[in-house]
Amino acid sequence: MSDDPRGRRRRALSAGLRATLALLVLFVLGSACAPDPSETGPLWADPGVAHLGPARGELQIVIHNRSGVVRPVSDFALRGEDWGAFRFVDESLPRTVRAHGSIELTLAVSRSAFRDSPGRYRNGEATLEFDSDRHHSSVPLRFDGDQPEAATRLGALGPLATLAGFALLFAAALLSTARGRWWAHLRACLDRQLGSTQLSRPVVAASLASSTLLIALLPFGPGLCAGRLAGVVGALELRQCRVGLGGQAMRGLPAEPGLLWLVVALILASASASALRWRAGSERAVDARARLASLPFARLLVALLVLPALAWSLAPGSGALSDWVLAQTPNIGPYLPRWGLIAQPFGAVLALGSLALTAPLSAAAAPGSQTHPEPAFSLPPILLRADALAWSAVFALVFLGGWHIPGLSMDDGSAQLQPLLVHGASVVLGALAFALKTGLVCALALGLRAAYDVRVSCETTRLRALTHGLVPLALLNLLATMMW
Image (cartoon, helix red, strand yellow):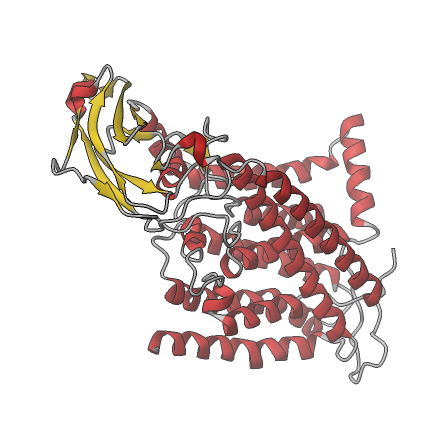
């Protein structure tokens, strides 16, 4: 495969165009899954299925009016087997819903009605019903006696699951040196991917595991609500699904707080990348190898200065990474989302620049270079792709809204907009949008690296550009953001 920069750019552009075409086709197919207002009526409730439990005694139900006229609402009632355990917190129930507006109801549950023994609760259910002219609506109410506790245990074990996944990936690469037919095939596959490099398997295992860990921590969707793929799912229902009430979060490893574990994964990825560059540059002088190995840590320093400034601008609700995306979903204009790229354009440029500068050099000196190139080094393509994709995915999450598609994904809990697609179509399109954004960021970073290599081809200049240029600018951006 040719290493010509123009060839790489053409392949990246072709891949981006194919991904865009596939996304458009799926969008057209998903549009056919749009909810039919004539079937669902003029009112719809968020959440469509309300989950309560021992750890959640109250919840809000938002009733949206999807029509352009004022709708009367009446005959609120609680029915079902366990209706007596539920009550309205405010008995002065609203009588109308304004056009394209909403009303809020707060329900509370008596936990003692479901207690079988100390610390143990049974499941129960009831139904909230109301009318609007001739249209009748109902919202299932479910008390999950054991699900909230299970969700709490899962959240507590999240960091342990993350470390266990990292350890398993590391051990799998190490065991590829074992004897046997199956391990021989695995070893041959790794040798084909690693080429003729003299990298030790522990360093390769650490690099692959850290990149995989970084990607596994990133949420690739707003939340998956089990059993509601064909229904209209709002922001409140997505929120309860993310915490394990009727659904689950869409990410590989459930570690919380997500921002803290993201920083840990970035540090591990930088350390493994530094070790790779040190080993790959074994034929160089010690000072040249040190500069080569310092590039990933310079990139990490830029990231650690850009992220607080972005958090100051977006003000997410918590340290959960899904809240970072939700903070970017409201519009700041008719069609302009509040992505991190819009809220922190200077920080986005700095982050993309550090991603491009830290990509490894090509195996030969670039033609037309105005500097004296240092001895070249090369890394296996699989390691380069894993590192670039992991950092590009982080960029797409914090600066491009992750899975958010303007006009299709839900805003935050105060939004008054109806989802245009059913839940299943929204989940698929959101995951594809996240993958497309990641691929385009990666292609852009590699294109910038190729353009930079035409003029500069030594790590000394790269490291100087990072430490003397991007790092001070990132610090200045952070201070200016805090003062503003």
